[in-house]
Length: 218
Image (cartoon, rainbow, N blue to C red; front, side, top):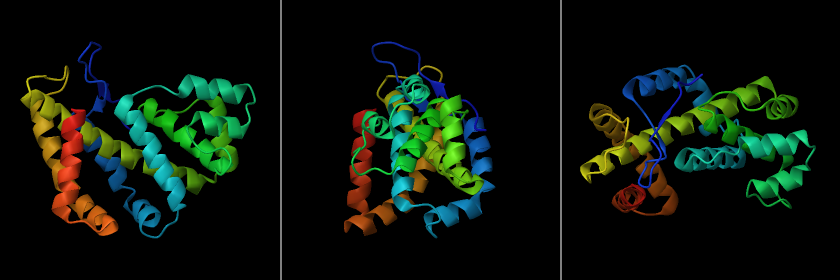
């Protein structure tokens, strides 16, 4: 299980995104290091449906970006026997085209991310167990963990930017921000290359867009 993440304290200018400390990052990287074969199978060999993979990563990113809790609503709906199509609409998906298994997987990913990689609620855990094999659940868990690491490292870089602007994030340490921010930027170069190829743009343009997004959100 990934260590619990940290949030800034409430307030008008509070940094409400989760961020990393260096020990947490190291612990999470160890978990994923043991799943290198799984990551290759998921991202390079398409062992997981690419559409589901991207839907899960987007769902996790949304949770880690805003921190709004979906756990209670999802659990209540499932416990009440809500129709899968209704849940799809609640999750912001097109109820006419979405795959029912995808809805459950996305909701599970959201709940796991919101819980700091803890378990989702009883009904949601049961639904995932019934619909997915042990290997499929491990793959989903791996994607959630990988995306959470990326999200929180990016959020920590944002904390560094806020510090430079005179808006220090409560609980975040300069050393962690510098190290983790540097690691995130280094990793972004490879991501930038891949994104540039996909979009037919130069790496410079892609990184410039990403930097502008980070600065705006910070």
